[in-house]
Image 1 (tube, rainbow, N blue to C red):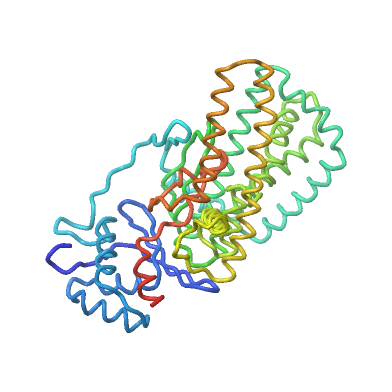
Image 2: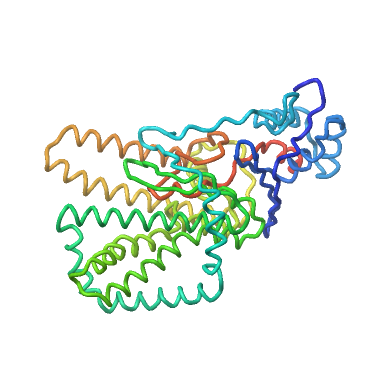
Length: 432
């Protein structure tokens, strides 16, 4: 630590979120646009870093406030983390100088490419799309979706008979891909517009390639600054809901137009690519919109990762090689982690097993050694990721995408909960 007393940067954006069982603090660095999480003890310490108060005085105040012992080593470790993240003022200004991240980031299996900064565009669109957030539009769109659902059920046979039209020629396939792209863009703009409407800023939209599958994403990290849970839920819900509304319009238009018209073909392509995909998107067992909605609703941050690690620790203890120290969890968290962890893991391994049985069988029949080796290597990496989540230790903090935790191409939409700046302080101050 420097010889002078540490001083917290005054430009940091700090928001407190009160849940039914705890108080959490989200910190945004406006320079790097990164997000971090703090506990009550960390926030209490950070608030007193005014460049004047001695560290020993701060340490004693923490012990009085939280009724526990805080070693100076833990306090210095926390301050070192603040310095590392650029939260402390320096002689040259506020923290570390900002470096614009490269547009292309990632690895062979996961990469993303920032296309543009949509912040100003979204701000202009918000002023012109206020009607989308009125109770009247929400009610009208909900009725439209229900009516479209009834129409597609009653005309399911006709819908299936017309599906071959979508891949009857290369031109047809190109049209399907084009309108699928436009609908997905509308989906992502739904997330971005809602985040902007509630006061957040969206500075990144782009494309990604996740396990050789194309994807699109909209970085709505500012949703973590919203203290109201319903706003965070709406940010996650807006994208798939708007896509489902577009699907319902396509269904009704499909029924009202002649099969040999171009508008009928376009609406058929939207129906085929958006309907079931949107419902699948609400599946909470896969890290898509449904997962984030469930995580926010239950107010359990990083639920998937923590559930996998909890299930892994239980398995380790059953075989007698678990860690001596056990993470302190409330009964509610244990129940959630047990139910979600076992269910999600069972689903993941089932999907991978199905891929092995179907795709693997086809490759063996084709007798292509190179394809078989590539497929086995790919599946091996997927299984390795699953076991790392169950038995691996946390890999440190990173603000942004959790590259090791993606499950599907559309998962690049919302980063997971901001990582903690330091947890040792909370443990020392609370659990002695």
